[in-house]
Length: 570
Image (cartoon, rainbow, N blue to C red; front, side, top):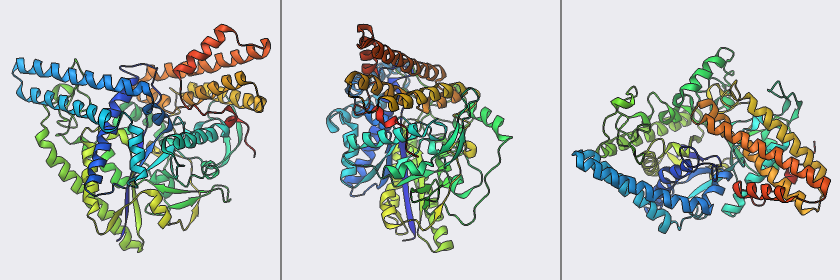
């Protein structure tokens, strides 16, 4: 055996329950469940039934777990699946009347696809996707890791208390849904920040103080490891994971590129090794694993990645009513009018060849490292889970094929990160620079001319909650606790990095800006209610009604405690 391999899949959607349906809102959650989460679980079940342990590492963000466990999601998802089946049946009749035989067959494919998803979800999983993931972990088939509570972008959050609370709630929510403590964490956007004197990047909200390194917070909560982009460990240029999918990011990158230069390459480090990270020289450290960029680009690249194969189902072109897709990618340069009809019979050969190719390059890279160093290195391939099935319809089947092929390997062992860490403790302590897995390795996607205003509101809300948590930390008043706990929920939702991402990519800009405004308004109104309650000694009827309304709308993290935001000891 010459080394190890692991898929790391990051599953996340912002909180959308009670915040819209279509085109932005609950339909995002339904689409991800139908096209990604259930098909992936189905693929993993098939592997287990054939005696193959998938041994993949899957991150499920706390806010996604809360949504998938919600009865409102479960009821809505069944209704959504019935609608998709009905739309396929209508399409089938339409195409039959027009004599479009292939399109009629494809409509039947969609009818069968969504009918099967409905049966698996309702009867096979008893409407509980989270419990199905938990069962696979409990049986030792895979590992589930956590994330920040609402995917807050750590390097840009304005207080260390906010980072601490995001991790605290993340760990607490993980324990609630999976019955144990997490061993690893996916840092939102793989974004890391060391300890240093931090200055606010927002000119309208100046701040400056010594910040803790992210590893110090992980150490505090007994989280063993995290994952970063290759460039943060090795130096050199970072090839961002999103830039090929969004033209607006290419436009932003052109603005930032002229003032950017890659990090110096560190020849003594290896992307195949894990390292202990400390930015303060103390024992408050955590282990880092790096993204293997060359292999990952086989999937991420918009120019020559597997999902761009002309035979695969096209993501963008849809038929209405119903929104089903009947066309294939055709070519990378084909516009919607030039897309040709999809032929499922062509897919098996594409998947088989590309799974073989990926397995081959995994062996190549692992073997080259072993021959060069004599060490059994690990190749870590991190991806957004939703890429497989939602963006790339055939993706879950490709993952299954890759794992089946790697299971037969004598040279490369499939392994979860925790299992690897237990057998391979890091030999070196290193420091890391600040960065993310965005193009160039820094923050321009989340902080730019379009999003700077959002951080001013986030910083003000963060400071207000820290102030109030300090003031009322030992209160026994149940109403004050209720008010501040809801303020804490609203702050977590306000801090979601999805809003800046959606603004920068223009994929749902109006929705993201509206959501930021809504949660910011809630926080300000809650603060007014608190001041009124303190002044009057009672909660007025209209104030109680308002609080009850938003408690019902943003009903997440039921064990939250505003004291998580009390000023941290230095």
